[in-house]
Amino acid sequence: MKNYITKIVMIAILITTIISCKVSKDIETPKDAFPENFRSASVSKDTTSIADVEWKNFYTEKDIIQLIDSAVARNNDLQIAIKNIEIAQYRFTQSKWGNVPQVNLNVTASTSNPSDNSFTGKNLSQALGQNHIDDYSAGASLSWEADIWGKIKNQKKGAFAGYLQSEEVKKALQTTIVANVSKGYYNLLMLDAQLEIAKQNLQLNDSTTSIIKLKYDAGQVTSLAIQQSEAQKLVSAQLIPLLEQNIAIQENALSVLTGSFPNSKTRSIRLSTLEVKNNSAIGIPSSLVSRRPDVKSAELALKVANANVGITKADLYPALRITAQGGVNSFETSNWFNIPASLFGTVAGGLTQPLLNNKKVRTQYNIAVAEREKAVLSFRQSVLVAVSEVSDALVKVEKLQQQESFLKERVKTLQQAIKNANLLFKNGMAEYLEVLSAQANLLQSELELADIKRAQLSANTELYRALGGGWK
Image (cartoon, rainbow, N blue to C red; front, side, top):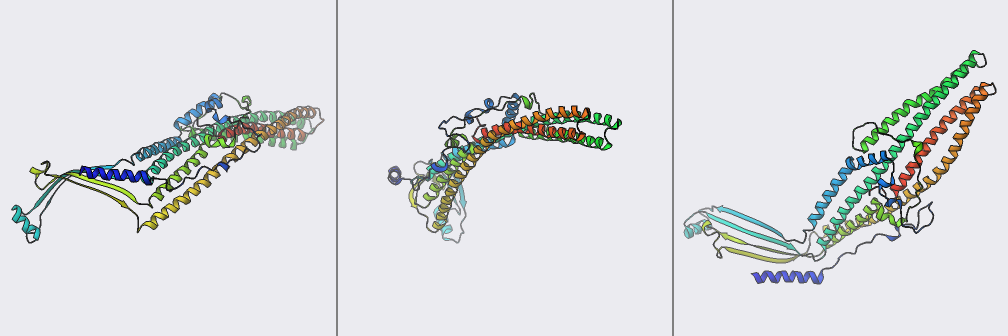
């Protein structure tokens, strides 16, 4: 029997060596999916990028760093992604055992009471002098499938790619969370600045209203001037509770991102003190596959699809399986372990080819091929989205800077206009409407300037995220 087992194993190894081959050809990642350069960027072959910078070095504000630290450690969505990585790792570890034979141990005991009028019952009574049969067995069974067509190998490849893909999903989520926390904080600073502007404008309106009332008492203006001045003051007054409401809502949103209950957020800096960085190092588009997690995840999804095609294609071909079983068997417990009389063993090897279910197996293969084609298209789409987001961020950074320079000049002009209007109005050389109009224009411009500063900071953050920064 030992020689028989050896022969079968040697035959299996020989068959595996001779005919083992890739039954399907993998599709590589499309090289033409990337453009030569980003739109709105100067042509450069420099591969360095701000995405290579760790987020703790990209953001220099300690308040933002503390918030992001809390989000990375406590954000529930991120914790779920980490658990998904753990699950994928278990699956990959399990796939490594695909080539290991399946071995089962079994111990059985049974008794049978045939009819006294049956052939077995009569012979049993004559042979053993009893009307029942006992059977005791203890042994082991072995089953092994030769990986002739690379099915098990593809299962390992697919599980490994799935594990890596789960890590990329977690990285992509972290880049989004890091960006959202920083943009939320910048939005909070903008709301603080706008609240201060509204309060200052309210004081300015109070001063103007007081002057108009004095002129009304002197008979120089009508009551309409007072009413319009009061209405303008109420515009600024209404902004204050609205901005305070938005501040509380933004703080609550940051609390959710950082995995804590709603509370106030510390701000040790002001929007006006923040410097907008000039991030010129963006790298080349083809580097997105290594830096941007969602693009890398799409590439890994193609590898999973390649593996599934290999698995389903292998199911169309014969499968070589070897089975063996051995142990001790006896109908009396006293002789159960009587060696070698109680020993038994069987060994079998065979090729199994699907026949009646061939259509079903082929359909599964066709579906896997279609899924792989979808994976290629999904990869191309992920690249399109990534390149578009980088291009959007680049044009925002450039154009917002130009807008800010014009808006600063506008605010400066209006501030001077306010001074002139007040001076002329006090001396009776300007109408009150000119003063109120100048104040309204200044309020709107200062609010817009704060929003532009916030938009610039957010555009830099968005460029960092679009290039794949934030997961390191």
